[in-house]
Image (cartoon, rainbow, N blue to C red; front, side, top):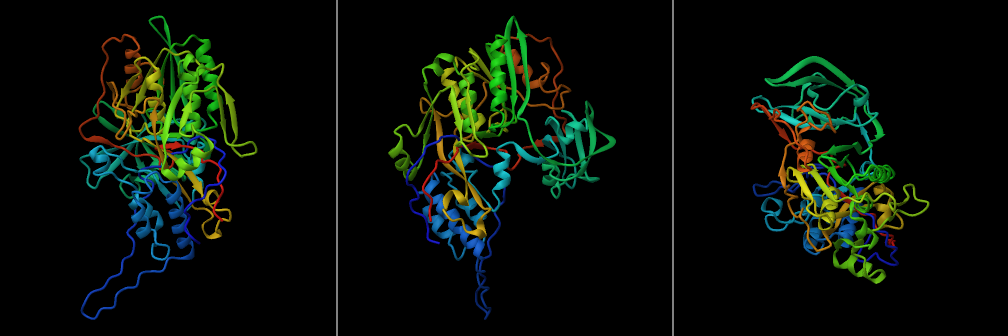
Amino acid sequence: MKRLTRIFGVLLLMMVVVAACSKDSFEPSPSPSPSGGGGGTTPTPTPTPSDEIQKANDFAYDALDTYYLWKDQIKNAMDTELDTYKCTDPIAAVNKIRYKEGGGYASKQDEDRWTQLYDDISPFQESVQGVNTTNGMNLTVGKFTNSDPQAYFFIVNFTYENSPAAKAGIKRGDVIIDYNGEDITDENLKDAYYGTTTATYGLADWKADGIHDRNESVTLSSVKMYCDPVICSKIFDVNGKKVGYLMYDNFDVESVDKLVKLGKDFKSAGVKELIIDLRYNGGGYVFTEEVLASIFAPKASVDAKNLYMTEIYNDVLTNAFGKSDKNFNKTYLSYEHEFGSKGDDVYKKISTKDANIGLEKIYAIVTGNTASASESLLVGLNPFMDGMVTIGQQSYGKYCTGYILGVDDVYNSAPAAISKWGIYVMVSTYADRDGKNMARPVGIVPDKSAKDTPWDGYGIGDEDETMLKEALKAAGKSYANTRSVEFLPQVNVKPMHNKYRFAKRIMQAPKVEKMK
């Protein structure tokens, strides 16, 4: 199969957005290297890649060479590391050659931590639509610092509605200290965290003097289910004004109908200020981001179809897109939104005309788990809102947009050997109407500091829950002095993310003439 240099013919530009996968999706595997030397030893020959791997090498190369934002900067590395007949691990090779500017993220410079090749793209595709095999628990990972060997525990942030965990009575603040009767260690940490099989979890309680074993357990059988991302919505009365609250967990397409209804409900109730809680939201589709932007932005700005967001692509895409649409890299506020094409399995056309709330103020709750489309929503809205307030901890710092491409999206005739393969490839960086991105490159720094404390004894949406309380205070609510809760000395937290649901800003790839 020859390498792809140009695959563009007629472009039907349908800009929706698909972006990023987890920073811990895969760890690069060391590729075999020949050994050799003196003493009469015979060098070990480099293994010949299988037919599947050879075709996967070509697919990765072709996709990067056309779509990748930094393709010119990594071209030499692509030629070396994705050699059709030498590379035995294209997944690791793609991870290795992803762009890194200077010192990268650690030095507050651009670094691609998201482009990812998959030998089976379907779980990722399903996940961005909110479908996962799960027991329904959203967890924070903690570790006992005085344990040897290292032992971990989980704190439940929330459970998805109608999930196995919710039906079993698991709630925010519950502590899990063992998995299938064993301590949670480096050996079983990911299996326990992702919860994709039937497993037994040992429960404990968080108390003032430490974590106390309940001596009870719960067995959860994971199911494939839609995880409704609208976790909680409420309206609070703060000094006579109506303040709406929405915790939103994933920018999927299915939830837009519910979001539009919620906008109408807030508008009908006279809500003028909104707390948008994105503390666990790793991103999703730009389509859904734009729906929310049209609900939250000032009505006059949407009526005027003001510029909302800009994108920067590589030269190949810029030249191809520019032939069909001079505004190919610009998105304008609008009430009309369309995802996909009629006849697609996932097609959505929706109007937000009557759902614009008429907001005067936005308070955004963010943490290190706030990424991608969550960040870009705030980046895009910031110039339109007078004094938007961010509360929490520094966000993740995902400033790129990506496409999810299966082999069928690149080739007219997909090689059977790699029919399941796919790539999540970074294609652009985004910025607000003024060309600014407050999330680039290391995240949004909040105006007010607050820590997520699921052990504080309050549920999501409770006005005394630690982060919501800080947002309500910013909105003008007064509180009497109350206790504060901090982690005890013997434990701390370790960031960990769902490998498919985290750091996604996804744009629907345009229709193109494929390679034969």
